Image 1: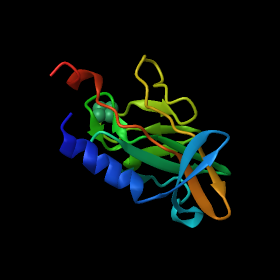
Image 2: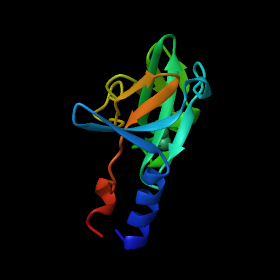
Image 3: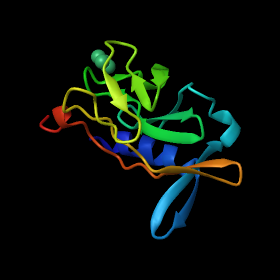
Length: 136
Ligand code: FES
């Protein structure tokens, strides 16, 4: 991973207010009314770290926006139904609670998320390199 890539990620993280609760870091990511029912909102940190936010009923979810099937950043455009998101490219279905794909071992990374005083607080993401890129 180049220093330029790390710099871009750190710059993105620094653009949000950070608070610590019980030793865990969260980012004030947006206003609560910017996350609509059953419509994804993508938070872009860098090419490899993107978080899709969803609201369904009274619950709010945060999962990786990057589908592990073809490493496509499309989950925020997925169909939301009964606690799941369906990838718009090939229809893989993931639990929004666990990130686990139905019927396979694939998994979306999940993030802690909650609302506080009209804002959405997201677990501070860490820089990661996808497994398939780690050996290059
Ligand atoms: S890229 Fe998501 S199911 Fe194929």
